[in-house]
Length: 441
Image (cartoon, rainbow, N blue to C red; front, side, top):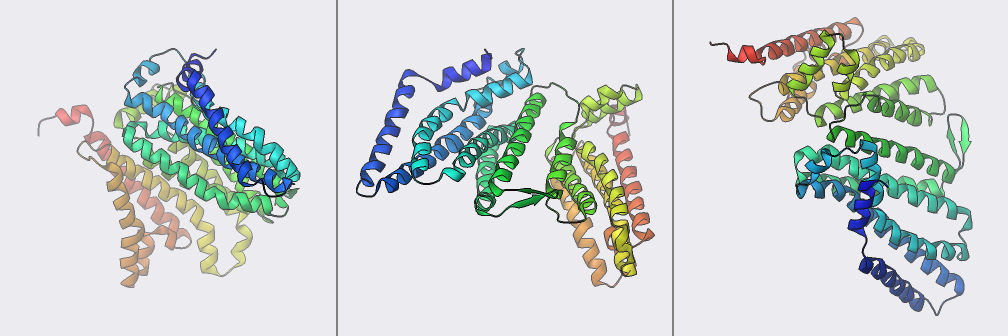
């Protein structure tokens, strides 16, 4: 048996806990039954089913999710995480051991609740959606457990308290965001996805299964990162591709154009997200450069952060956008120029921003490189173009913000931005080398 799974079961279960939870649930269901005993049998069944559903959510979605996140953060707080990192367990074994073991007590209580909720819902007149509701509830539980574990693993370097708060807020935000689409999907009409008709409940469960698999893979790869087990960076671009395919399927027409635009937007968002949340230390990039110089491509890819993968993927989407949006060039010249050149200009500006982020990250004196980078982004993307536009300097505004220019001007301006940013990055790289720092002035 998986030793981590066995250890988590030993921590979660005891003779007292095994007996107390069924007794508490029995008392709760008895109270619900007595309070509804004066009503019809169907009303009693509905009341018991509702109580079972609420308790399932509390035990599996609530307590189980917090237990999954705490399975990592408690180890760090108790200073026992280093012992686990030095063990011979592989990332996947550690992931599913914690994911299944830490949440086992919540699933134990949730299973007892389903024993009451399912018959109650059947007798209460909800058989058409019963299977979808049960399967969807189980998938949501696994999704939340894996998501909070992945978030806490990513935030572990920030300290236990910060990671706990970030994980808790993630749990709350996901529930609030998903409440509306979930209820709408269960009540809505058929959904057309990639020209294929789906019933709303079937599509809801299939979507949940897709996102659950993604979060479990994310938790596994996050565990590999924190255990210092290097893996090829395929997970991040794969998530971008699958997310693009999923979102693009809702377009009623022009699937190629929507696929290209959604892909470019998804890669842009994921590139900036990884760039801002993942540490970018100079020694990491020095190892990448040395392995590239030694023609060790696989070793360089094993060291590579996540954001370059989606940045590289954004370029094909930008080129595809040019071809997909070609019919719109019959529009007025200004609109056609803006549509035709914006995708490539956007990718060039992303390259510029990534170079500037590394410029701040490689500084030996900067304590908050992310804050400095975000301040510069506000200036470059907002303040400077606004001031130049208010002054009536349209040409300079187009140079300062190439996305506001048209035609070849946008490409030239974006290319100049990239060259300037790469020049600054090269200067910072050379200035931060050990021999440069030790050279007397």
